[in-house]
Image (cartoon, rainbow, N blue to C red; front, top):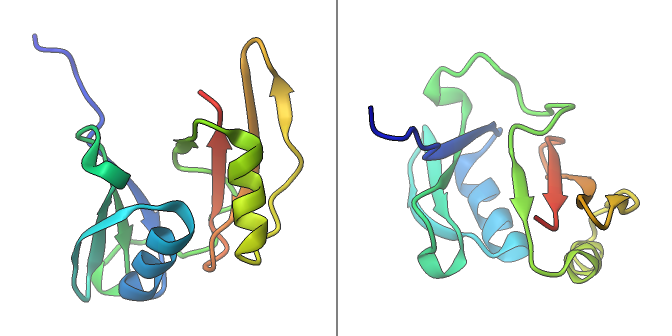
Length: 121
């Protein structure tokens, strides 16, 4: 059997187009497609095959926006810089936690109240 890969993460949102613009502006995702049901985003620079799919109410998803837990993690090269950037966009990221030898991280919420986990690896 070929190795299994994760190709997308799903996050419920109220408005896929508005959320896609936020993820683009604040986290640097590139918008691949947007319609009334969803928005598909890819990491800046198009690296990797993994995408982020923002599912709106028209998609039929049963989960409501405002997830209190992270569906995936967002890895960044510089955690302190990412935290500062989010603060600059009016977000209120939590404190940086974790072990520098294992993984450092913080949580922040998107405009729909979904918890996002930002990590250094």
